[in-house]
Image 1 (cartoon, rainbow, N blue to C red):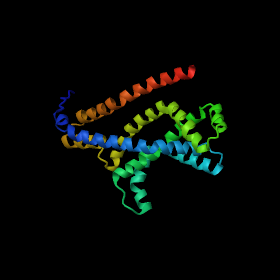
Image 2: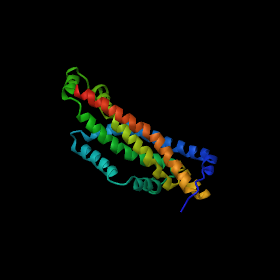
Image 3: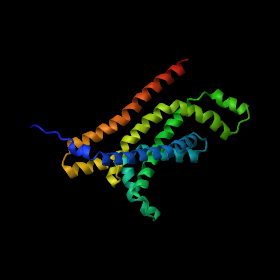
Image 4: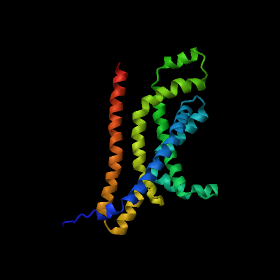
Length: 223
């Protein structure tokens, strides 16, 4: 059975897809900005000697790592407003769900980065009379961040891809607009193919950047 491809409706509605893409990028960017500092903080709490704090941080991490992102998004959208007793916009719910999930994954990445720092660097900070907060700011965070940059970028790409799940709760992101146009014009093959291409074009350069950074990092570690 032959199929006549027709991209007319795609080109005619590129502005709609572009508007959805901006929403996807906003969701991803805001979630990353929130997740970076809170993920690092959670990693520090995960490594603390206080058993209660350590276990609480571990429970948060494992919960968000071991439950599907889609379930988390739907729960935040429908349940969080009921629990708090206030109206929460769909976009805010999307940010809360995406950033909450990303915090857990960033925390594990930062934890591995912190544990990779040579102990003598921490001892040197203690010898210089730096407080725990100063050691964290000037020694631990900069080095841990540099070590885990490739992982953070990979997770950022994954977050951008998974942000398409917010379309299930009527947030007008790229996937939502693509499905809307596909349903409206009965051209799912053309429209959803273009949507996939857009995700690929934006994500692929970052995956290549991750490879370059990983190679450079490995070379530095081998010296």
